[in-house]
Image (tube, rainbow, N blue to C red; front, side):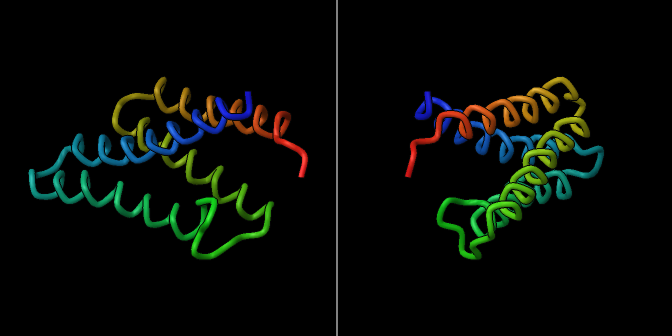
Amino acid sequence: MYLLALALIFLLELAVLVAGGWWGFTLDAGWAVRIAAGIGAPVLLAAAWGVFGAQKAAVPLPGPAKLAFQAAWFVTGGLLLLLAGRPVHGAALVGLWLLDRVVLALTAPAD
């Protein structure tokens, strides 16, 4: 169960990047702005994840701070989907992340 939860969290991480691109490409703006936002948002999200959220983050955060960052990151993905006109998808993203966090906490192997 733990490995399935890890696989799901990885897919959800990718979904946040897709949400950033989706939001950017669906902006009500000129094509240059949509392209910049559609490419730039996922790049910025990925950079933030690599610096603070990843397992081997460049800036390791203590447990509670890392969880807070991850929560903010996934809620951002949900909000981007909401802004792109997909509120159900955004809520599902955040809800699945919450459920997955609970499963990971309950099934984590003992150290």
